Length: 195
Image (cartoon, rainbow, N blue to C red):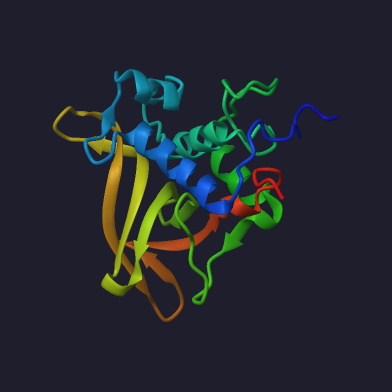
């Protein structure tokens, strides 16, 4: 077997359990709305220390951390040093792996489709990924877990839970000022659900 295409280390009994585990992993990584900043041991674990690099954005680190916590071990998808594999983290690969290496698990946004809790959202411009906590379309709100933020009080890179507007435009779904380009549907990733 190709070590890069290892099967997941965990299997979930159903989709609700899988999605709940993803949300809990992201919530822990962000410490909810309280947030985490550079120097916090959990923040440093999630970013593998890369947030110390000048100009580095850690949004993709949260997504890949959550995938690793779910047991995803396919190194064509997961870009981390601590994923138990042989391929090291690679600069510039976080977003492209989520979108292009996940096959049918990545869903391009359409007016009639919606992501579900735990899914990894791809927003642009500028490009950003985050983990969906909940979508309240009736009230036009969306809650996500995000890294790649800045904590102005601590003056450090940060990650935290956020809530912003959600809307359906004439040609796109909008999350705050950004367009929702698509999302990684966790339930479509091969091997995570015991079927």
